[in-house]
Length: 179
Image (cartoon, rainbow, N blue to C red; front, side, top):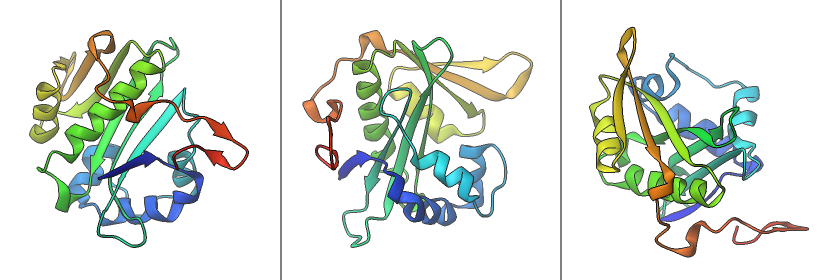
């Protein structure tokens, strides 16, 4: 699988990725029913700075147009040392380990960027994501006062990058190396 950072020119790929998700998958990821993402939302999702915000995509190896299989992202919170993350996998690719591998890669990248703690909010009914979180060694706790939500979290100090694939990209005049 080819993993790369999302780019500003991925707006159409991101739109197609979201549109192809089942209504349940869109709801579990976005926490509301979304039929068609706005241009503003798509721009926000495809604009990253490689430090405060990051998004990695898995590109479908059989797609000539570079369709997304999965997207994982983080955004630092106000502390600068913690970040909220989310991962979404296309319905037909769920259950194959793509989300687990992409999330691991995102966590390795985050650790290299100095993020010490990562967390996400998951519906208590999203057993697949909760199992991924447990498999990654994350702590799973309920949200006080809201039994429908769980918080998954991990201290990244223990994350040891397994390969150089997550090295921060070097900016060049034409973009980023390795893209």
